[in-house]
Each structure stands twice: as structure tokens, then as C-alpha cells.
Length: 160
Length: 402
Image (cartoon, rainbow over all chains, first blue to last red; front, side, top):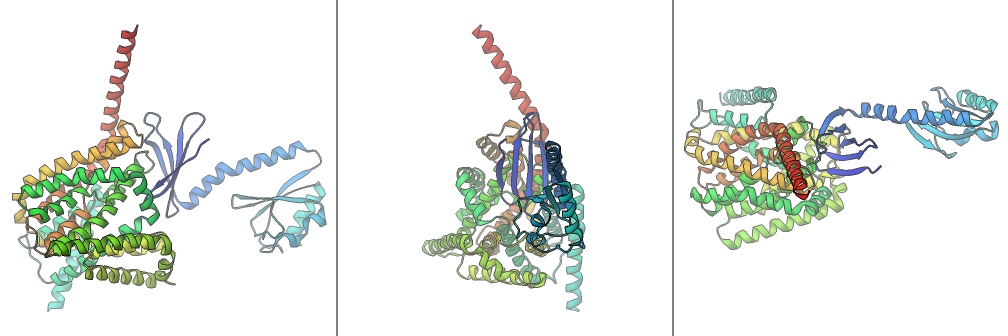
């Protein structure tokens, strides 16, 4: 899949590519943050059949819908693959003692044996976070470990 | 009593412009032609003659030109300008020559003299980037594959204006060939210098004008624009070009917020500029120039169609897209009026140039967007017809081969 990038002077950037089924789709990123979703016409490959204007929030929501389920799918598959190992996405609550603190301070691995493999923040995945990575309320901490270890991690993140 | 008349007349003008702008939005055209008509109707020789706010309108319209060019410069960053210049320079030159030369020829034929012909070159050459960009966005064509070519031409035309305007002002003001050459050289050196400065130090200048509050930022940008424009005028480079260059210098790093801050100011003063151009143009002079204006309109449509066709073909776009590109470029607008205003202000050029430019812009600013819309079905029909012919020719060749 080749994503083509084209500069649109005075407007912003356009990215587009052709899907396996032969449809050209693209996105215009305007300078003010607005996005346009483009579906090109089948009869005239130079013109758009559909153009959807998206505000920044809407574009983010759409990206999440398109991207997030794949992360969850992958996690679900991982969970099925290895018996006896639990994978959990733990959401950091607003009252968590680690809200705004580096993850290393929670000492999750030494206290529970479970490993933090990723952090999901507003749809963005931060893979293999370092101990210095600051956790925020609302983050989803993806941990892998024994069932007990995962449960203990959830408890640490909730109440220290 | 004078204050009351001034406020009343000014209020009536601006309120009237608001109504016209709404009307233009309703019928889906650019408000510029309506502003011009309003100016024609209420100026010297019009239906009602307004006298009191003349002094204010004159200053405001000069600020209008400065702001129009400043915002135009802000649209494109120096990187975009240079990148487009590298990729599309031949198309830009072709565009200016194809569209400008008929205008220049018409200027000579009508007896405007060489300076008038130079002004007519600019008036017919430059598309209205404001109208074209709006039409493309309204018709949902920003994603189309011919659009980068269209936008590229607009960028190059604007860059061409940065070279052309100082040449025109120098020629208009100069008493001799030497003086004119000197001013033009100064202008071109300034242009090159600003492009380099903008690439290197744009962030510094942007940080300098950006204040803590909107008010501070707005005042700093406006003040700096007027200072630079005035300084440019002192060295005979044309205030408009000074503002344009400042815009380019600021564009890379100034955030979108600052653009939005300046837009209402630009809208107000630019509207006053268009009205004021209409006011100073005597509508009784329109009928005699109507025929040459309409001939130029027809030629202007043809040459822009050709330009768009060639630019889109160069980008590997098929026939319907080439027709769309050409039709989108047809509207002329603000810059033709800026040029006509500059040319006639000093009295160095035949006064018939102003009504000619007004008639030309009025027609194309209205007809252009309509043609751009019509280009979609027309392009598809022509594309289908050509495809059919090609298929038939291929079939014939196959039969002959067998």
C-alpha cells in the first residue's frame, strides 16, 4: 500500500492511496485542523465521489473507530493464544495515586510480577512504555501476567 | 453637522455592503462584483452621489489593498512558494503569457499606450485566488487530482504579482527609463531578500508580532504591515508588495489563530476598497468600453481553459479533470481591480482603463463560478465522447489488422 502525499498550497496536505479492491481514498489535512475524508469516483479517478468534512474531534473519533478495534482484536487474540497468562487493559481512574506520576514509581513488575506492555491514551498506543513514562487519569494500562498479578496491578493503580 | 453626515453616509455604505454580502452568499457568488456595482451606483455620475466620506474612503481603501496583499502572503509559506516554483514554473509562465498578452494587445489597440498595455496585461492575467479557492471548496473539489495544479497556478500568479506590481508602480511613477530600471532592481532585490529572510528567520518575526492577547497581536500585525507597506512605498516598491512580502515572512510560523484575527479587518477594508474603486469610476463611461470588455472576457475564458488543460495534462489528469481545471481558473477579481486602481490613481493612464477593468471583472467574477460548476457535466460528456471515439478507432484498427 503506497500512501501518496501531495502538498496543497494554502490548504494543507492530502494523503491518498488505492485500496486492494481498487478504490482510491484519501484525507485532506487542513491547516486549521479540519479534515476532509475523500472517496474517489470509480468512473473518473481524478474526481471525488464523496467528500465528508470533519472537525478535529470528529476526525479523531473516526480514526479511533477505524484503529482502536484492531488493538483490541489483537489483544483478544493474544489472550486466547497463551493459557494461564492474562492480559488486561486497566483504565487509570481519576483518583489514582499514580495520576500524573512516572509509571516506575508504582513498581508494578517487582510487586506483582506482571509487565506493562503498552499504554493507550486517547486512542494513541504507546508501546513498551519506559519507567519514566508519566501516567494520566484516563490512560489504559495494558498489562500481561498471571491472573493474580493482573488483579494486583489493578489494585495498585486504583489505590496504591 | 459634518460629523453627522459622515457617520450617516458611512453607516449606510457599510450596512449596504452587509446586505449585499448576504445576497451574494444566497445566490452563491463572490460579493466583490456586488461591491463594485454598489460603488458605481453611488459614486460620481451614479444614481446618488455621496460626498462626505471621500477622505475616509480613500485612506481606508489604501489600507484595504495592504491587508488584501498581507493576507495573500500569509496564505502561502515561503517553502510552498519555492517548492511550487520548482515544480510548476513553466506552467506559471505560460499562464501569465497566454492570459496577459491578449490584454496587453487590447490595451495597445485601444490606444492606452505602453504603460496602459502593461496594466492591461496584469488585469487579464491574474485569476482571483480568493474566488477560485472558495469555488473549489464549495464544490468539494479540494481532493480532486487536478486541484494541486490549479492551486499551483494561483501560487505562481501571486508570486508573479510580487514581481509585476513593483515593475508597474515603478513604470507609472518614473520620469525616465533609468529611474524605472533602478526601482525595479530595488524591488527584485527586496523580494529575494525577504524570501531568504522568511525561510531563515520567519519564526523570529512571528514571535515578535505574537502577543499575549488577541488585541496585542492584531495591533502589532496591522501596525507592522502598514509600516512595511509605507517603507516600501518610500523606496518606490509599492505598498502592496511590501505587505505581500511581510505576509510571506510571517506565514510559516504564525498560527492559524492569527489568520482568523486579521480576516474581519481585511474583509472590512477590502470591501471599502472595492466600493471606493466603484465610486471613483463613472458608470457613464461603461457603455463605450462594453464591447472591448466582452471580447476580452471571451478571450479570457478561452485562454484560462487552455492553461488549466495544459497544467492538468502535465499532472497526468484525464480529460474531464483538465476541463474542470481550466474552468476553475476563469474568475478574475480583486487583483485586477488593485492593478486598475494603481494604474489610474496617478492619472498616468487613459481613464477608460478603470471602467474597462470594472466591466471585465464584473462579468468574469459572476460568469467564472457558474462555468466552474458547469465544467463537471461538460467534462464528463466530453470525456465520454473522446473515450467512445478512441474505442471505435481501436475497434477499426483491430478489424483492419484481421
